[in-house]
Every structure is written in C-alpha cells, then in structure tokens.
Amino acid sequence: MEMKKTRNILMTLFCGFLLIAALLYVGGEFMQLDMAIWTDASRECQFVCTTLMILITIGLLPLSLRLFKFPRINSYLLKHKSVALIRWGVIRLVIMGLLLVINTFMYYAFGYESTYGYLAIVTLLCMPFVVPTMKRCEAEVAEVPQDNDTEIDEEVNGSHSQL
Image (cartoon, rainbow, N blue to C red):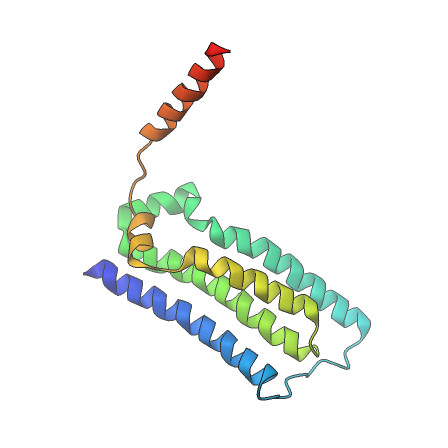
C-alpha cells in the first residue's frame, strides 16, 4: 500500500512537469502568447545563457538517469524502500522536469531560439526512462541478483577457450 502511495506522488510530479511544459508550448505556438522577453538581449548575453543551459542540461540529464545506480543511493533505496524512493525519485523528477520547463520557456523567451527547443526535446525524450510506474518503483528498490554476471563471465571465458 505504501509503494502505491509513493508511485502516486511521483506520477503526480511527473505529469505536473509535463503539463506545465505542454501549457507553455500551447500558449507559445497556438495561442500566440508573447513570451519573448529577452529578444533584445545582447549577443554576449544570449551566448552565455545558451552555453550555460547546454552545459547544465548535458550535465544533469545523465546524472538524473543514472542517479539510482550510485552505490550510496542504491543502498539507501534497498534499506528504506518507499521513503528513499520518494526522496530520490522527487530529486530525479525535479531535475528533469525543471530542465524541460526551463528550456521550453527559454525557447519562447529568447524569441524561438532553436537551441533551447532542441534541449527541451532531448529532455522530453529522456523522460520515458524515468516514468514512475508501479513496476519501475518496485524494481528500483529490489535487490538485483549477482548470479547473472558470473554466468555471463563463464560463457564468455568458455567461448574464448574454445578458440
């Protein structure tokens, strides 16, 4: 029952960020809301903002995708299950959700600057890898058996010895 509550919290957060990004998109594309607040920014300002968002996005996306693989976080997830999953799942979803929303907003704020659109699309393409389904939530807090690695090693070593 507690895992279902955890999944519901994470799913609400996930859908909330997608909804905010979708509202920005609909407002900017179809309703023609004028969100272009930095179109007259200097080229240096545009360059610095674009470079920072590229570096932040490229740095944080892999981090958020691999977050549960870090040994300390993984052991915390295995010990505390749903409490740890809420904490680290929220962190993961907030990182990805904020990247999506900020890049979508910056696309319109800089007057359809395509770099931010591409960064938002890349983030959106990464989002399905962290959808908090019940199956994924249970898999994140379950121990992975290590027996499969030794079988693979034996198969690889056995095939090399036959050559």
